[in-house]
Length: 459
Image (cartoon, rainbow, N blue to C red; front, side):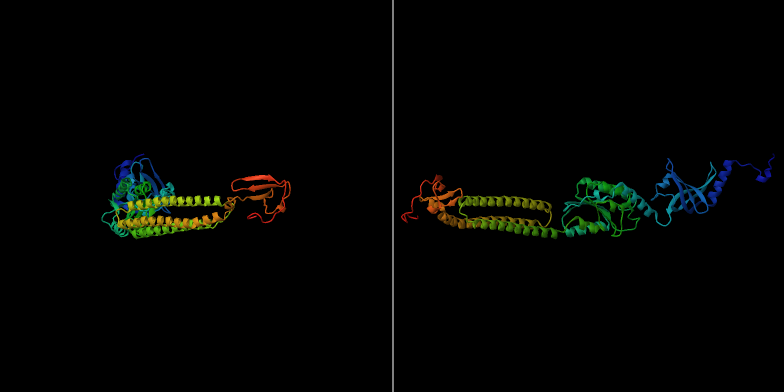
């Protein structure tokens, strides 16, 4: 078949030439454009490039996005997501495929940063970075406080102002770091690791408020992981009260503002002093209550006037009283040592602050109270001994043992153990038990003599 060259402009095109011409035509007439559509068949191959399709209700176009551009995205495109893509409309010459080479993608509706926030939040939550079981308690009274923030921002001024007002002369270590922009995430991570190894008691990480873009550094994955992995308790104080970042979820405590973080980390000096004063009052009240209990027990024991076992009871009471006094001394020594140790610990923690003079005064008062308590106990015991000794003498005078010592004896009819006062209570053959001043004897009645009148003294 003969070819009419006049129908094709006098030349025959190669396929590669035609594809190149179409490519130049597309790029020259359209160039870079924005196009909206739904992401479909999103796939990243081994080279890191993404191949997918953009489609609407009537048509679709092939798209490719190279790995260098994907790395700049704040979020990960997903199938079914409505997006606006920016790129070059072109032709892939080797296959003659019409496509768009995408350089940037923005989600429709919710912004890219918000989508990235939610995607990373879900990922880290599934890994357990936000679990409550991992969170560490804040120290009661930290000696060293680490802060990672900008040295020129409002946050550091607010934190230092609150700390100075609540508890002056604290040891504060500031690690200066950028809080937004390029390189800020790495600087914050370095600050957290440095202070964690330096040996501070608690770390405050934060900055003042701002837009989602301004606060984005604290949503970076490396920052969140550094907060989670730190051995030192961390307070996240990013933005204002309504601002939330991923660092807030990973931190041990989230503070709504930098000022609030400072209030959380130290207790007010006045409050600590009031606690010490209240502790002293409760100590003295408990000592007084315990002493009154022992005095009451002693008074009850002194009122016991049994005759059958008077010697045994008196000896037991004396021993019990001695044991009580020894127990009280041991208790007081133990309590004094415990409270003295607590005061020493409090002095160590408060050695750089104003209440040193107050602690010294309280310690002197405690020593004085101990001295007065010992004197009071000694005086009370002496008074009770003075009261007890006359009672013992009087009991000794009335004791039936004293009567027996003068030669008398007591006779009991056995086995009923009835005290015999007259001969008509007994008969021949009865068994009697005779109690002398020293010792006893058992006898059998062989003869009963008639009563001769009151011719014996005391008969």
